Image 1 (cartoon, rainbow, N blue to C red):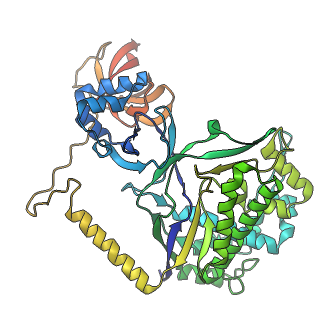
Image 2 (cartoon, rainbow, N blue to C red):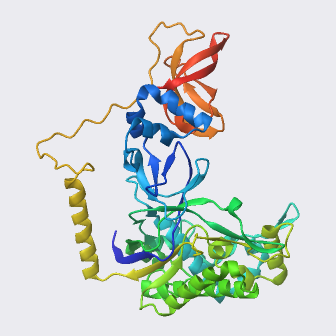
Length: 501
């Protein structure tokens, strides 16, 4: 397929969080090394090498009793370092979490590299494009049929799929699958080098005024401000020709509005959108009387606003990821374009019992009162792309030449054989299953609290599913040994955990 390709330098102006959907549990998924200001995401094999596989019960017991795994490891290994137990390591720029705190994990790739997925970036660009087109067709925001307005439990509900179809994919032949114009916009994933962990501050408006509420403030793993990477942005020429050949008509007319097919047209639209979000947010806080709690936050918003106005041609500033609130997610078209009563109804669906309070009434900011997720994108010329490629190749060569231990590799040494994977086994043929018999089982990775679903290996063609009462999630996805504790009508009905296989 013929493709048009450009490269963009990506710089994080404020910390960026794209969640993996996983919450890391302290004391058995991560360890906090306070002196080193590091968090180690636990590599189980490294931990077992220190405490001994025969002591896995002791590890699980520590988790059950909420004792400190780090103390046990330090008793077993002098001068324990984060790398001794870590699959990957995160920095702690401020105060660290407690054992019972959970951390919302940043998305990483299979090599453990923090990543901004191209799909997340595309979602932010989609918001820009929809708001731009909607400003040119404001009547669509007042059409109840397109908004999908309905009453649910006495509350009005609104959607935007109806008018998005009108704006983005009208009048195309229905026999063409997936005729959304964003098929023409293909950003690649963006990889970074490190992450940091901090507890966000939540500005929340109460009856008595604005407060920083720690009890509703999560711990986040983020890509820090000041990180630089690059994005590969492609446009499939064959798909563009297919769209044009099928007589695309409507609000997004490619010859007249080449926003998605020409970066030089898209970048100014992104800047205009981001500038409006910043101006509306600054105006919000001015209306609130510039409370002291938001002073540093407002100063950063003003700084970002000034930065946009000084950008070179082709560069843009965009907000992506967690922490922007409803206005960043939607672009804020509701307040500008909805009918007044519709906007009130829509706002009440968020405000609930307190529609008189400010909207939105919470803000997520960093410990230094910075907003989250602002990125600077700058087109790269051919010389910059070539220099980047050369530097990447040099780093790859270095990483291949120097192992983690720092020892000089022997060119004749054979690579170590990978360990044999742990496999479940059926009991020997003819084994009579009775109370006290030990069997293999697989623990499914979906947890329901203390009840874990397991597949019990009773015999070929005779596997059965049971539940196992065990509080720790450490065994999820593992092969374990269980002891039969109950049998009814010749069938195993209950087991208890004995250990990892």
